[in-house]
Length: 209
Image (cartoon, rainbow, N blue to C red; front, side):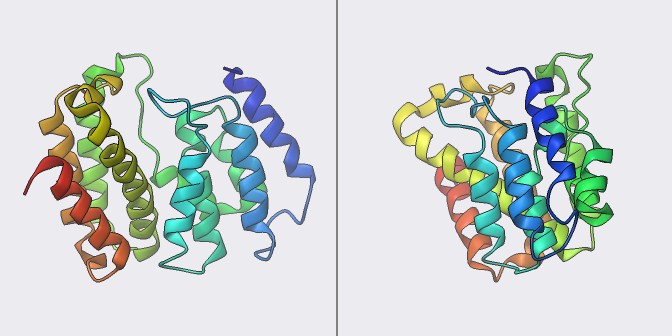
C-alpha cells in the first residue's frame, strides 16, 4: 500500500487547480482529491479499492440532497480519519462548511492506543454527537456512510458468516449490532427516506430484530 503521506500529498497538489470552491465544480474536485488521498488503500479484509466506499456514500447522499457541498463532504468523509489529509487542506480547497462536515463525521482515533481498546468509546462518541445533532445535512452524511457499510456487511456476512467480524477491530457482533441500531435511532428524523428504510432493513437482516 502506498504510504499515507504520498497519497495525501498528491491530493493536496490539487489545491492549485480548478476554481477553489465554485459549487459547480466542487464535487468533481472532491472526487479527484479523495481518489488521490485513498490511492492504494483497500476496504478491511478485501481487495476492494477504498475509494468505492466514499463514492457509494456520495451516491446514496445524492438520493436525499442535491447540495454539492454535502455531496462533496460525502466523498471526502474519510479523508481526515483514514489519510494524512488535514483539516486545513479541506478548508483551503473546499471551504469551511465542507471541511466541518467531514470533521464532524471523523472519529477521534486515539492513535496512541490499540484500536480494539478504544472501539466502544469511539462509537459512543459518534452516537452521542448524532443524538445532539440538529442539522439534517450532517444526518444525511452519516446515513450515507452507514448504509454503505451495512450493504458491505450484509453482502459479506452471507458468504463468511460469523468469520466476518474477525476483520474488524471489534470482534463481537453484538456490539456491532448495538452500534448500528443506535445509529438508526439517532437518524429517525430521516425514517421516511428510502435510504433509511434500506438501512433499517439491513440492520434487522444481519443482527436480527
